Image (cartoon, rainbow, N blue to C red; front, side, top):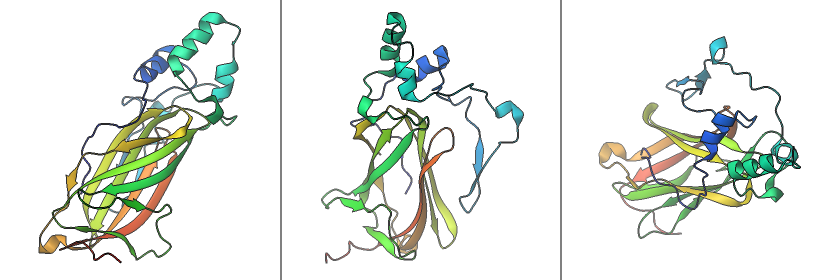
Length: 237
């Protein structure tokens, strides 16, 4: 049930953005792997950060909203061109006064060959014990999700998914999605194809926890749900 490293689709990711942000030292600094605060995850899926180590705390100085950054020094031709090169084509209509980025997960979709796409509702379900989807054992599937970014650049957006069966953790997926600029049109990201487990012991009910967080540990979605793996596909209603 783990998700392997995959290629992005329909994501206009600015490959120069992270490098320039690091070198120029802007307030929208992208935290790289060496700067990221390490964390651990226990058997229940709770995460703890090494927040108490002063060596891991960075002083980035005063922060500005992206709109303030764009309008600042707008009369300086050289700075204006540098910002355009650094930030790329940002949708100004998606830029707000808020200094914090906002990410909204629009949809989570399971794609299985020869089957209709299964779009999961967000929030998932009000019934905590009800399975929100059923997959056939030994079947191929891909996970696709779409999201919007507004207000400011989101740095180091990461997807995690932890799965348990009968209280035992059977999968722990962590996928770095990257850094994204604000825009009104949703981004889409698709993981590589995976195969569900098969056999008598693989069938049954699973519990899972899905999260989307950024480099600052800000959570944009944190949800728990149940799903099933059965011997055959469910009968259409």
